[in-house]
View 1 (cartoon, rainbow, N blue to C red):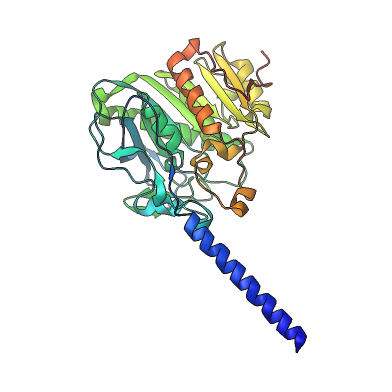
View 2 (cartoon, helix red, strand yellow):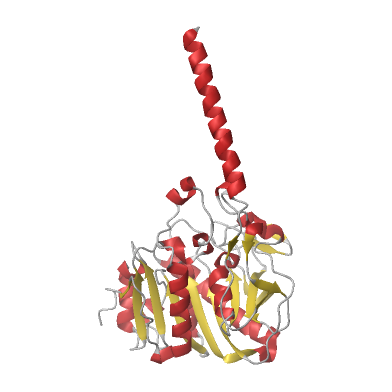
Amino acid sequence: MKFKRVVAAAATVVVLLLGGYAGFLGHRSRHAVSVAPAGPYPVGRGEQEIVDRSRTDELAPRGGNPRVLSVWLWYPAASTGRPAGYAPGAWAGLRKFWWGQTALDRVRTGAYANVPFAAGSFPLVVLMPGLGFSAPQYQAIAAGLAGHGYVVAGVTPTYSANLSVLGGHAVPATAAGDPSDLAGPRGSGLAAVWAADARFAAYQVGVLLGAHVDRRKVAYVGHSFGGAAALEACRQDPACTGAVDLDGTPYGPVVTEGLRRPLLILSSGRNGADRDASTRSLLAASGTAAWSYTIDGAEHFDFTDYAAYWLAAPVRAVLPLGNPDTLAITGSFLAAFLAGGAAFRAPEVAGVRASDADHR
């Protein structure tokens, strides 16, 4: 009987501790965090769905349909207005860890929904996410660029992202769009689809926004697999002024043909893209305006908004996060590269070094 009482008491303590921890998580996840930009411009944000009728969507579960994409727009605004929510509507499904992360309605974007554009014509940046990710998970980077005078089109590759939203409805990934193995022609083929997405978005946004966009100045930026798409899109687009790959393994013809426009690779400090043979091949084949830098201590997810969220210890233990300064460092390098082009001079930042991959 005594043993049973001890077990019962221990079980009660465990339940109380778990309940207390759950209560702490629920409370802590409601603390606000911010991905608000700095810069001379207020930032507006809008959303568009674009349809590429020139292509049949080969990633869709059913054939014969055109490719449909969700595009989020961040832009220099003339004024402030109603704050833009971080993950409105069905985009709330981006919260994967529930009480283990910041509630998405508690993320302050610092952007304003559908406010008027600032006067002028601004360069365009097409932003591509990592495989499985969605454009709204890169709001710190996107809004930061918009605050410094760029129109940013964040593309969510349908059927490759774990969540896209089309017509107000959640659209999950498919096996074709999010394959478990990118080796060989599968990776290059998917990079070609994404590159076509990026180029179509650049064209369509230019049409939709008219004089607000300087269509002669288009740059492509991507994280992880989106970096591969950015490189390949830039290789194909005569209007491309440069490409940035954030810790992504390159795929496709650009690996061997190189890039003849300004190119920047930023790698994480552990097992980053700078260690890939394809990165070395790309740099060797590219022109002189190509740079590769490594952020010491950075991990792969540090380039996403996960780096700005509060995350419970068990979640942080399984996500590749490291250097808390990575988003700020990335923003400073992007601003310098996009402004400088072939005359780019890297900011002097502690913990950032020229990559060993760039051995030309």
